[in-house]
Image (cartoon, rainbow, N blue to C red; front, side):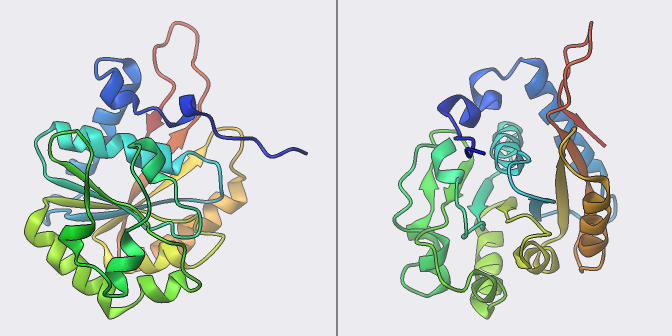
Length: 228
């Protein structure tokens, strides 16, 4: 079967283009749920993953980052899916320099981040695809990057590969304050979702919740993007 190609329409930032739309409202609901997910400790870093590919995790985190920045938080979105980077497409940014270069000490963090044209939101693209993504993410350099980023940003978001495919998402879940999983309505296998939840629950990071993506709109309902 021919592989489905992503289109420009698939990579629209609806929260930027239509902030008053029902979909954007659902992203604000997700934002609120994140804020209420931890009462005693402030969430400063979040990893977002999915059970498998093409479930909408990158689209979700790209739009969620806009929503968080619209609230006035200084946000850094990091493309930590170095095996299949896509975040640069959403913001129409070059991907010649990014996370890979920072972790290998080729460039400083502040020289690698890109402005997005959206107030309070900056992006660190993945950079060149390395041969050893999991090793880079688990390195001391990654811990140093997080410590430095905390000095400049209120919240750091990481787009990570699907959790059942490789260990990268678990690595980042161990480094961040919380992790969110995206599942796709009618596509994500139930057993796969349970297995992915078990893997994420075994990490140091708190499983903040699951976002159900691609749920068909119900009759007389404006919503097709739900969170729990």
